[in-house]
Image 1 (tube, rainbow, N blue to C red):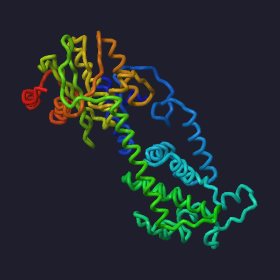
Image 2 (cartoon, rainbow, N blue to C red):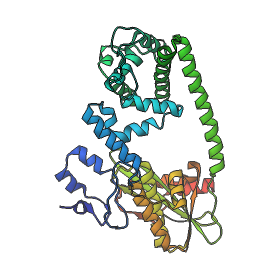
Image 3 (cartoon, rainbow, N blue to C red):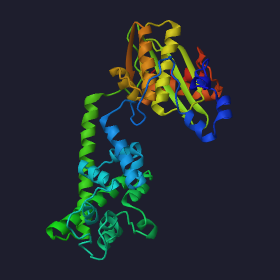
Length: 404
């Protein structure tokens, strides 16, 4: 049996009757997130450990490092490079702090215990308390000075016996599993200032008190957040400003608006509506897919459905409009790759050839209301086939009310 045997090629969806006969519930849940392309293409080798499916030296290094770490018994946090790298580089902290956290995770801090393993002539004991070997865990968490720092911090962490049994990588992993971005940023900044203060004491014989350490950490974090926020605001203003209202297409064109709606344990609804330069709705379609797709993939499918609707209706000059900026920029740049999303983007770009002209466009959610309601309507009719030409009464009313 091949993967192709598990697909219903008429509806281009997974054959769930067959899946339930062959796989367990957890496997089926994962399979449901895999989109099936509209166009048939040749099989190709893709890289599992990168977002775009292409090999990079960085991804190769990450895997090689993870394998080496497992062989040396380094904590399992580094065994999932995608998870840790994604989390690490989304921290809103200075780059040097990100690098420091990376070294913590991989057990690469030059504590005296680590330096002794490299056969340096140094005593492995902690220079602050002198009671035990200075491991990364002791220097950053278990030493009395470090324990007081965490207890006095805004996080009010008091390391207990369970916490002390784990490594720094395990501790970071437990923080990573929380969903509080502010907590993540504050935690790694305090971790970094603990190491900074340790170095000051060891190499300059300068003791920084706990309050000063925390003040420095919080000030630098606040300063960095402010800088990034201002920079991002300027950058966005330079890139694009999208309309909040639906704008009619120029004469001779029609505009396709597309959107999606996802419901857990049910599937993905897509909606598309085509209007002319007077704002008149010409045709519409909505469809329910049994797959629970990622948001960007679902939005790409909505655009694909909208283009197919326009092609079947015989329109040659179209504006394809979405409220998803990722899809808009990928279409605008004709950005193809080997990821799940890249496959659907490639189908859309190949479909461009069926038209005289296609112009990608982006609008804010408020200007995409009609397509959004059509996508939600797919769950009402519960049809896994495209429902074409029928514009629901509530969408008609919205169009008349907004004339947008």
